[in-house]
Image (cartoon, rainbow, N blue to C red; front, side, top):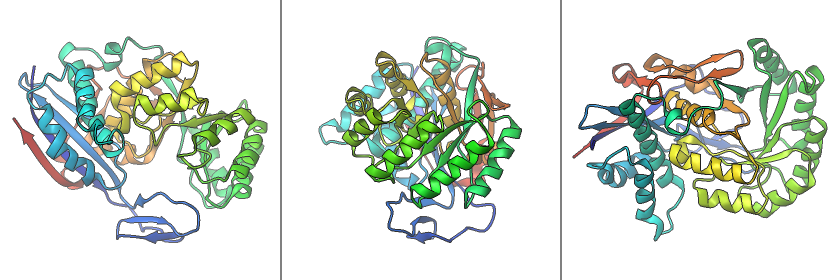
Length: 394
């Protein structure tokens, strides 16, 4: 089997309603940062992603998805001029070999993370989809089998301008069947965040609702210690990205000082960077992201975590069906799985052109059993959301 052509789709789903501009500083018509003195990531008003379709000489095609919530043109360019030409003529069944060869191409120049690995992830996911379809097996079987039929989810989308609004939303999520949620920092400091967390815990005890907090690296050391101790009192599962992402030593000291597990993974790409965080004791819950790591590397990261007796909770944010499906298969196939991040917005909005065999039932994802990933994309239906398309042929 050989790769004959690779198609790349940049998809941008426009907002369904008016764009809220309060507290945002727009740097382009579509991209903004928080209008404050706090560190801020860049965000888009659109829901953006990149799909990769890999076709073979045996008529089998696989789909991959790259997490590209901003600047998807960058990974598309890397695919067009670098990785896709490399993959042409290769056997996609050799996914581990291809992963290592792709990473080797820029090691000497120091590009062993970021956009390069993001682009690699899209191809890698598609290779696994092809492999499953060719062998007539769901991907989890190729990874060694499934430890579980369902994945317990936490809902990571809890909007609201204040504690009262977020609590109202959590009450609705509880009614839908979720018994775990992740609270994202308001970005207004520890007082506002703790007020929101205590409001939720006041409504739902530890046996009714599990809590997690994502600080997005915004806390100072002293704030992180205060909030971390409070999370212990609240019986939270984990404290995600509490301080600036480069401060591995700070994360290590915090992990030693508080009862709640420190979770990290979104900014990291390969087993080599995860190894440094694990070996130093700076992370206790690993959160690799499928759209930035790919199936091949995510499995290696999960096994490394297992060797250190650490748990695995995959990061997901603006993923659509392909990224979710790949994460679901890996989560089913590892022994140290903790909990699954469920972000409904992009997934629900992409449903008109995504036929996915996994489903959500009362706060749990049912693992699909179809060959490959169990997702097909209706390219015709997706056309209206595609802002750029190209094909690289042998």
